[in-house]
Image 1 (cartoon, one colour):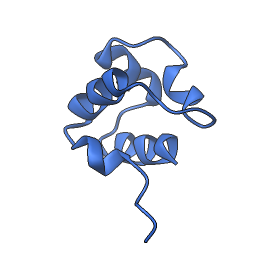
Image 2 (cartoon, rainbow, N blue to C red; image 1 turned 180 degrees about the horizontal axis):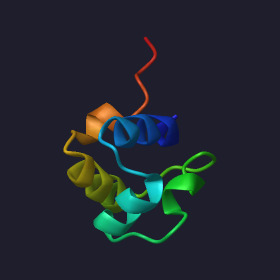
Image 3 (cartoon, rainbow, N blue to C red; image 1 turned 45 degrees about the vertical axis):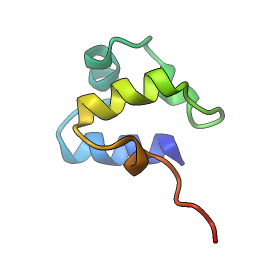
Length: 64
């Protein structure tokens, strides 16, 4: 879910996942791992900053 949101926002901004990782200074392939595991707060913060969005906009919506 987080991976898909990052991918969608990055695409709208004309950025590849690899470019987001490079700008966020996180390891190559880190964001792809978010398909099956949760990111660290530190990495999520870096990616949100690169994409110019809030961390909350990258998180799955809460179920009520």
